[in-house]
Image 1 (cartoon, helix red, strand yellow):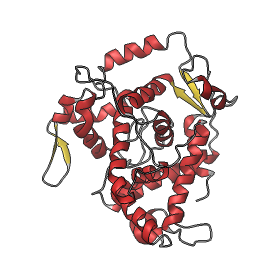
Image 2 (cartoon, helix red, strand yellow):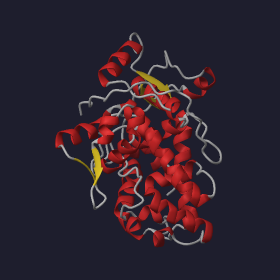
Image 3 (cartoon, helix red, strand yellow):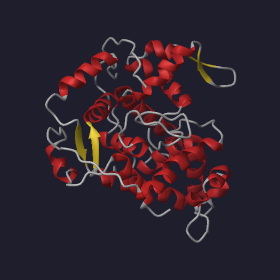
Image 4 (spheres, one colour):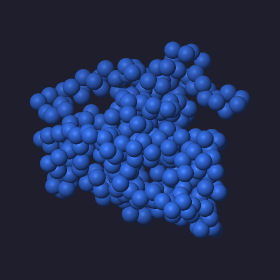
Length: 340
């Protein structure tokens, strides 16, 4: 079982101690990653069995490794850009395994299916936990495992990285619809399958000549865009179905976690949203691709020292580069430079 997250004040003290005398960032490919975030991703990988490279790519796409990222047009927040309902669902399902038993117990589902917390102040505190990278990384990893579990029966195997992120972008309901079409009618227009999402952003569903992308083409575009992010991280994307390691860490007695004090482009709905309407799918697609595409010309740059980088030595040569653009600029260029 995964080990519970320690209370936030202890996390803060531990982070300060671990980074004394070190650069506040580490270099991961073209990204300058806050050390607290890199450490959170490694801790989450160990406690959940989801590969570090999978979590790093997701964090790069969603927030550019910014733990307090806030989407401008949705409720998405934090390292993995959870919207309110998806976060409450993740805490309700997985919080107890990560030291959030009290918070998980406070979340209930109404007759309409809406997740809620009786006390407004407690709801706000639980939602603010998205800004804590340790908690966000662990629940982000659990969320990816949920997506994998939902899509495996559709595919007859675990999803690959492109299919896994398709489940994130479209929600498991939308991804299921598209993946079934890829298997049965690969030439069918993706816009026919997801008309509301297609109306919200025609550039994702049509080529430069205006011709609609088929379901197969749409999936391959997703794979290509995700692959570019792995390349910019200097990491090798997993080939074939994404496997998760067995978790052997024993649980320790946990405590409820104090909330973090509560920017960036965000992704909309990183979705466990099988029952959500297609407007949520559209929100996810628009936020992830359009905002990064429009940001291609942004004049952002930054530097980070690779000193003290704790990555394995075999990776360091591939990860270090002289120029280290800011996370937001790099992620935007990855998507903006890809053919749509």
